[in-house]
Amino acid sequence: MRISALIVLFLSTLLPSHTFGQFTGPLDSEFRSISQNSVSSMEANGDTLWVSPRLNFSIPTSHEWFVPSQADSVLKGRGRVFSLAISQDTLIVGLGYNDSDAAGNPQTQMGIYFSTDGGDTFSLSGTDRTLDTLTEDNTVIFDDNGRERTLMSLTYGGSEVLASPITVPQQSPPFEVDFKGDVIFFAGWASGIRRSTDFGETWERILLPPTELNELTPEGEYNFIFDPVTPSQGSINSQVIPQGWRNFVAFSVYIDRKNNLVYAGTAAGLNVSDNALTAPADSIRWQRVGYDQNRRNGLLGDWIITIRQNPWNDELWLTNQVVQGNRGEQDGLVSTTDGGNTFRQHLPGERINDVQFDGSTIYAAGDNGLFISHNNGDNWRQIRQIRSQNTFIRASARYFSLAKTNDKIWVGTNDGIASSSDRGETWSITRTNMPLEGGNQFQEDAPSVKTYAYPNPFSPRAHEVT
View 1 (tube, rainbow, N blue to C red):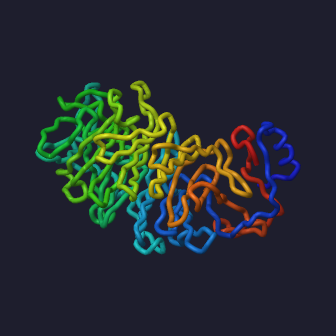
View 2: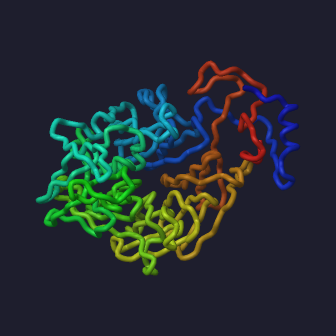
View 3: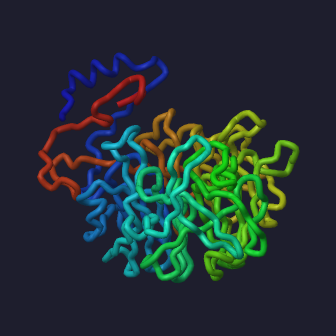
């Protein structure tokens, strides 16, 4: 749909008096641009950057953005990129979508993409591999309210732990993926933590401790039900459904390759394992660190959305978000150098979505802009609005994601991508462009136009400027 100049002038009269517009003449509009302006995930390797939601990538010496030719799930299907992990020529992509056919349009898993040739070809590990399968060995029982429940059995150490099988992809998108060699982990919310030891051919469900426990070891004896989808306490056949279900729903996972540690972030804190890379699933040890309102050097909140590690000094950084909000929790950012025994607290009260590093310079992307520290988090500078010479990220934009290439920091927002090669002093901004001469890599038969307006349709309340 086109917007005439008359409509644009009319809309501009609806803007608040403090907003402004810029006109720079014809803009460069490459045939190959990013697919959407809202970029929630990005990862880099060397000078190559990959971004969501349609798996666009940029390469050195080119200002254009490309799409892999064989990624049909995102190019032709409804799949979108929820997470990325990159190492040399290996690319692992967590795929999902919003299921418009289900109540509430839940975020839904599509599977995991794998590429070992830099994105030239992809294979898909679908939900038939990553979700649980019901068998004749499942246990059918009745809970305290007389409702029938079907449970599966997981062996852990010397215990048989009953678990609610996760057999549908809704509410199980791969929010984070990470890998080392052939071992891959993903955090899938209702699916919890899943692991593959054969590069995605098969997957297994990984048990985490309930919130009532601070550790889980195969030497212990346990009598609880592993249920990530029933947020109520009770019992089934004298086995406890713990209030600790919050530690069964996972949002983030990270592998410390140097020390061979695996970190899992949930709605109940941080879980650390020293053998999850190599041990059988029934022998993985976990230590859990949760929010404690009496600790001044602890987590700011229980919900761990993002886990990253600074290669400069190996410090681990976690984003904290408020889950319950009635125990003194705060949004913010924390860092630890001792595996989670103690934390430094940063930016309390700010909803931080991602963190990235350039030596002692720390970047934090949040709902209220970009935060930069040049002294390893001791002091912070807030950039509420990123501007370039020609344009700007709108003032109310949310900053979702960060990545570091060899010479640039990249910021993904819901209003485009910003990049800087001088640690945030000056910026360039990339948005989806419509070539005036018509056609682009997503719609080759797009018509030629004299002008176009973004956003379209436009709302002064939602978008501020056009």
